[in-house]
Amino acid sequence: MSEYEQRPILKALDGGRGLSADQADREWRAAWEEIATACDRGLMTLHPMHPRRPDLLSLARDARCAARLPAEPRLRIG
Image (tube, rainbow, N blue to C red):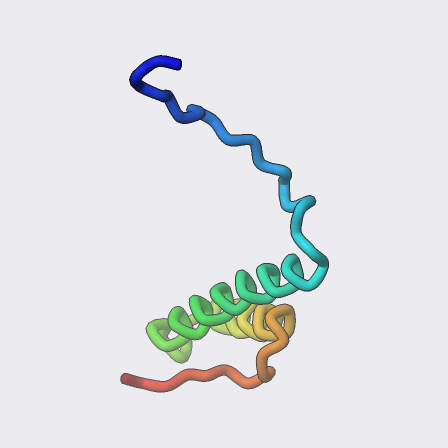
């Protein structure tokens, strides 16, 4: 063996096949929670009369549902 050992350049990933069902579900819900949080932040900055606001409200509702969060938005100023 040489004095310098080279680490592998690439690492093979199993595409999530190594996750347990519970772990995969937790990761899925966490991802949707991030999306729901982003939607809520977007709704706080979007003008209340914006013509596409209902679309974002619908997306936020769906994201909260997928994340198993309460259906109502958590829109707070500050």
